[in-house]
Length: 172
Image (cartoon, rainbow, N blue to C red; front, side):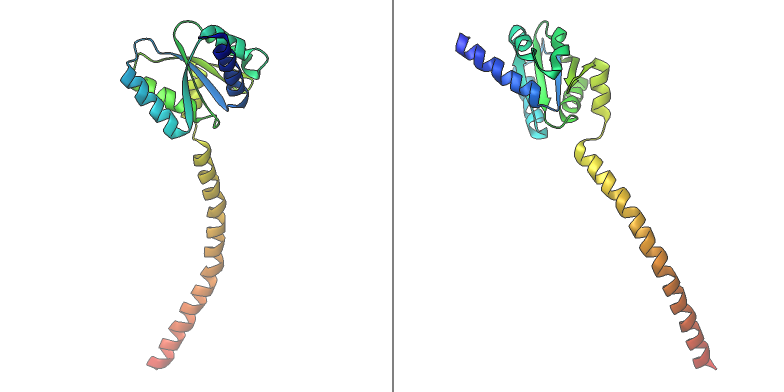
């Protein structure tokens, strides 16, 4: 890599560390090219990105960002996975690590919070932003449905009573 390429890589990584909702760092030694391509495509489909990181350049890129605390994780063959949605990257990485034991999650960061491997796994178990919105919308709609049912119930009961009296009068 030439100096200009290195500078460009560092500026790109700095922007990634500043703008991403979450960043996950993992070792990938032993992962085949086909597995890595599969992993990248899964991450891309979910809305995230995977990059192989040069440790020294990644540490330089971390300087002055909120995520500076995770610079200790960059040792050995590391990759970074990141996304704007804080749940996407940890979820995809954890799911892939379950099926492939060569990918080892080291930790990561979510904003200024540095996460260890357990923190990344617990973040992966949370529902995504879209799922949370759907649950919230469901919770908001449920009381309205119940209120409508309660309001309609007396009218329906009155109609049944009137209908019963009408049938009784017709029979008599």
